[in-house]
Length: 172
Image 1 (tube, rainbow, N blue to C red):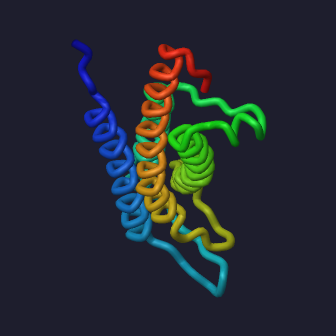
Image 2 (cartoon, rainbow, N blue to C red; image 1 turned 45 degrees about the horizontal axis):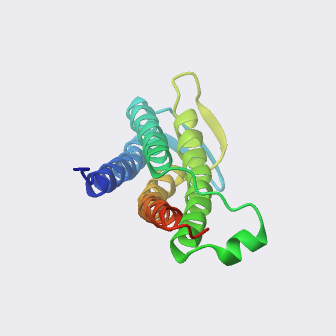
Image 3 (cartoon, helix red, strand yellow; image 1 turned 180 degrees about the vertical axis):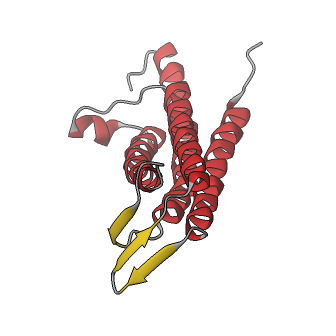
């Protein structure tokens, strides 16, 4: 008897993304606690080791959540417009969720990494202010979790549909 671990995988993905989001927001709080001098739009600030660690951990967890969802969700491919028109609703939802999760990953991961690099030990930055990189990246981690879970659920459902249709001789 095959066991269905889908619920646990969805919980794992959401736990990773929620933890990454909380760490991103905590990194923003830690970054705001360091000493900085501000004049108009220019700012000089010391790096925060705590923000660096939290931002790095948030970036790793976001990447791990994305890899987990994509590897365990499987591959859902649509090559042509005709494939898209003939695809089931689950397959169309899987493709849309996959595209949005990649876009959110790219933006959120970039913001977390840039915030982390601004807080590396070797940098004392002076220049245009770069506020809220961690908090926006953290919020995008929450949104990423929703789209990655939607991808996983719809991709596995599309896989089951294809297997059921294939066993009856119906082409997908």
